[in-house]
Image (cartoon, rainbow, N blue to C red; front, top):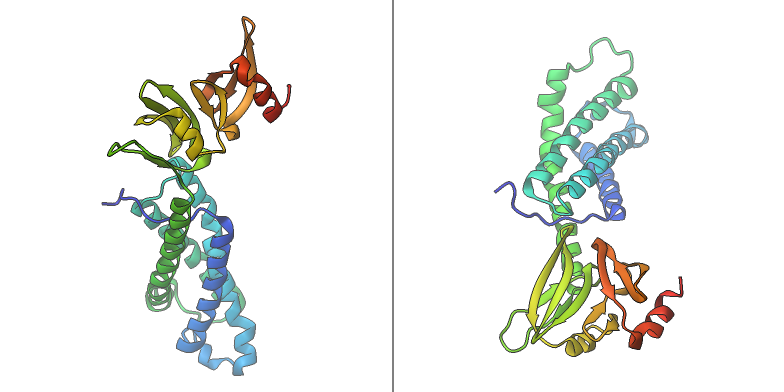
Length: 265
């Protein structure tokens, strides 16, 4: 259950927008519910002076955990799960407590003789606040994740299988090359950081028509120029090296076209 895939948006700019929205929401929450003796502030000017600091603290708590989020995303080979999401919220909750407590002690009531104890602050103020904020934050992250995955899915290319045979949908940049194999084509592609192969019943010429951005290097090979790394010359025969150390032959027929695409060096 906890390892189940969860919608996730890895784009930093979207998470910065979430952090901004979080700061605004915390400010509004504190203004309307008036915890932390905010009703004792002398009018809105004083509220506007102090309450945004809590909003900034909440945004910072979110931003501070983003590197951990990025690490987990790479560790799980660009995949996100329910357990990863829960770890993110745990980290944010801990940092949020540290920052909000610091704001209260050193900015809101500096030097006060009788500030709220840590226990009272956590149980009566922070816990109710975080219980209100986290569900809204979770909905926002889920919505961004669903939107990102939809855009990602819509941008995939499809290599169809003839008749009722299964095809393959994949991001163009994840497609490495396609090799003719009798009545099939062998597709080499990247899936969650792993290089995989799939046989599809189709002709190489049809794949070339379906995905015109692929480059013919040989009568039996189409490559994705995105993965080009370097040329390789061995026994007078030209090859090119793609990502994942994939070596593809270049026939004389297509040498000029290939060199025009990548240059002579």
